Image (cartoon, rainbow, N blue to C red; front, side, top):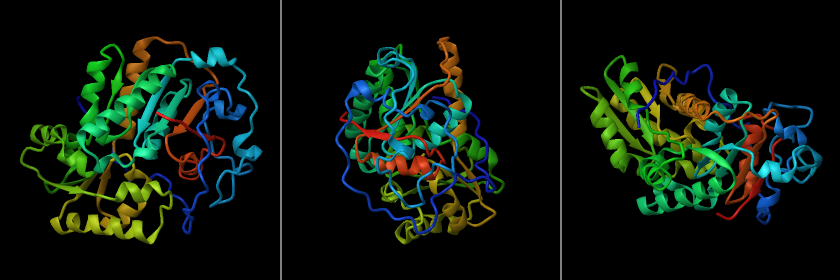
Length: 346
């Protein structure tokens, strides 16, 4: 899969992080929600493009508690039967990291329903075997297909590296958009010929990543920095915890020592802590990520399908783990305060 040209992530516009001191404790996860009600049991305002709403947002650090601000059970204006058949774009990741891709998709395709699944019960993928990642990716993709997704965005570098070919072989007529480290644009951006890639262990060990480096690195010195455990800490939704800060410092130290001037964030979770990574690497380090480039590719593929748009278009958030962590990051890291998430079995 060719990687579109990527814009710099930009030190002046990092993805917003949770406020300092944000607690990570969560209550017991609720039971999975029946499939028939997942789309329709959204509050009316979740059908529109989510925007920050300070008047109705939960206090910083609070979890949704079933109040009208986050879980009002007003049925969606569309009938359940019509909603179940509504063409959507399916998006999945091993956890919350794909929210950064979901946000970019919403900005480019506000009229398209989006269905996001965080496979949190099986996260992180980055420390799993290739067979395990492939099996989970196929299972989640099948759930999205059954729910009406007319294309899927694999918002996970690790799942793309280990499962996207299997998905395309199983469903040759279903558009599958993957995400992978943008080695080519990083090579183009470096000024001193030394670049770093921060990614999961599984991504760096994959044949797909090896092929990208072989095809595009050329004479540039490329330092691949595996970051085991970083995704798991981000999944706890306490983005300013001392443990997370220390882990980021540990992984950035070899890149600073190698004298790189450009670092590619090779996992969709990492933009959620981009400000901390920038602080650890220094203000002159150029950071690159891939979310908007993937959204552009998905937009092209969706528009080629010629499907009708829906306004207002809902967003559906689901998790195989505790949905409150997914809600929490959607509310406070992205400002989507009016969406709720439900738990599923997939």
